[in-house]
Length: 494
Image (tube, rainbow, N blue to C red; front, side, top):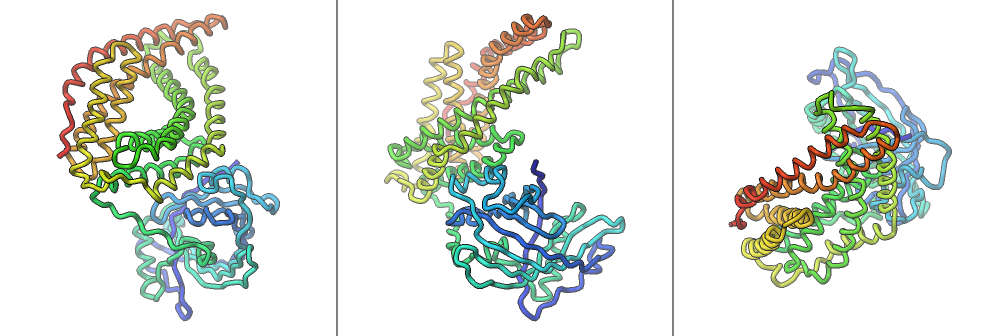
């Protein structure tokens, strides 16, 4: 079973002739313990074309030190990474399956094999407070590395790392950095030892896309954000983390909605196959998400009931019903994320962003082009609302409301507060219709739970109570919806 820790650290280059400065006297630092010498050796794993390194990930098996084992480092934010750890086990040509799974959004089925071996002689100092609590670790590393593929001669260098302890904060990092800077030690241009060693095989990072003013610039910036969200949420889904399925599904649906609503900006015929695949992925994830929503909904509803209305082992009945279904849905989600179909979807997203099929209209100014396309999405919603005479019709209206909300969200950077206000109004409509649809989905499940309780010789009364509450909620939503919808109006972004 893996463990996970958050690391906040900064890496520095230490040119010849520079010495590590005195670190005593820093605010909050009572003592500096050390140096302690450690000898470390790590084998790094990646695809042949270094897909993990290019994405800012490192996967290694380290021996020596007090954290020997398999380490997967995932970027989280500025200076912060999540390190997933497993025991070292025996030396292997391939990393453990659990860690290999977490990088598939980048590796996409390509073999993970050793790409480098790095040896480090480390001197470590610990900065502690008056209670002996660790504030930060400062290490001086003498590094020797060799690429596995070409058997090149070893490259050697010296670097400094500063990592926050449990009691440290960013202000301490800044103060240590100031001391290092005074000594001539500067921030490293490499985020990891591996990227420095293999720099000649890693193409320079493409410059971050500049937010332009054309309609296509705005739409593609949004699609790019969703692609990044997808890459971030993928390993979280695989690990079964809270809300991860929901967030991954939202990213796929946002991307799909943007490409559909703005097909006059990014050529629709060229994105149709991709949006079909995004629909497939959202559908697979939908099973797991629906179960998650229903279980939370029922558990919360039971908690709010008068205890006199909770008859029998209701919570145990919910667990027996949902646990195997959720486990199967999670397994199906991960199987989809390990499939060649999913990897092809990811490749299609990359290809779209690398060479987007921008239309002549898409090259026009966002302020002139986008409002008309958002208005078209509003008209689609208005038509669905007019046709909504039953549960199915209201569900179609909900999906149209979601597309309008995402369309306004796409345009929001170009139109500011007015667009933000309108988006919130549309979200209110979507949320209201979402409550209705959740009730529609919940009632047959409650009937099933009640009937099963009866067959098992248990009391199904509480599930009947919940069914009645869901029915009443749906009726109230239907009554309220007309009022809320009248308050939305047509979009006026500019």
